[in-house]
Image 1 (tube, rainbow, N blue to C red):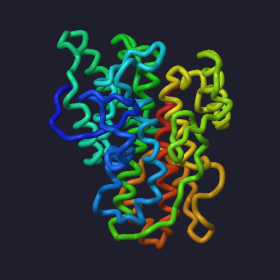
Image 2 (image 1 turned 180 degrees about the vertical axis):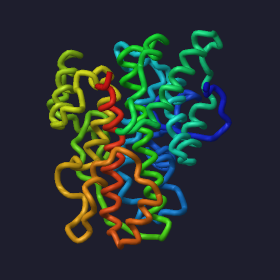
Image 3 (image 1 turned 90 degrees about the horizontal axis):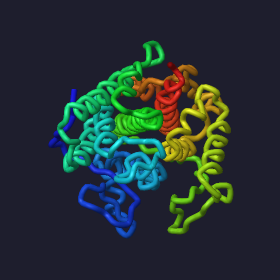
Image 4 (image 1 turned 45 degrees about the vertical axis):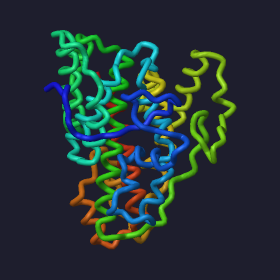
Length: 332
């Protein structure tokens, strides 16, 4: 199925100082505009979650420009051997958002996609976009109990390894967004408040903290070879062999976006405890790679789970979903 024309409204974010009409709106001089195009598709402005509940999520959306500029660059393609256009990337994102049935997220990407010109209507281009969309659907619907989709069709359509890795990153990222948005809306339905806060994020070169850039010394690199070596080291430092650094590192810009949000998501599912002893839940919740449904979250709420613990659990599952899309890259 080809997604070339959409009339739904969306938005996005980009860190480029000069904006073109097709560029997602972002303005470093206007916090209101930047918040409206936040990482969680305008959740900060939604009337359901009250201010006290939305406040803990601000660190996630504070770095929207850094994330979107890596995953959805207007031009050129940031990956050395990549060919995915912005139109194709947004088609992937919209497909995932629709499959998760997260209305706000679907509108977000549809509005971003709608003003962009589609690829020339050649048979080759149509086949490429159809193949990308179908693979995205199969990947999004796959799980640990189902086989991962075959990638031969993508390669025949001209996608490089960097493109395929980026596609998996985009699927993981939008799945991450969908879990946060649906989870927060479910928790906020009863007007609960929270004091949950994200763990401190190590400063990256393009992340603004109080308007001041704080580059890490280790990121001052002398060239692409050194940058790649540092990236691979950072991935391996996670200590998860199932996350293949050599493969994930084929798309360095997307990998950095993933590492940034991973840092905000706190400890891994196997380290530390997301729930206190009095509210402990089965470990399967912390290890799962499938979305936590509204029904499951409602059941946890009825068991008098602490809202802070539930937010922490949401963050962990959201990151597990993203990680799993990258783990699938190692499956031939």
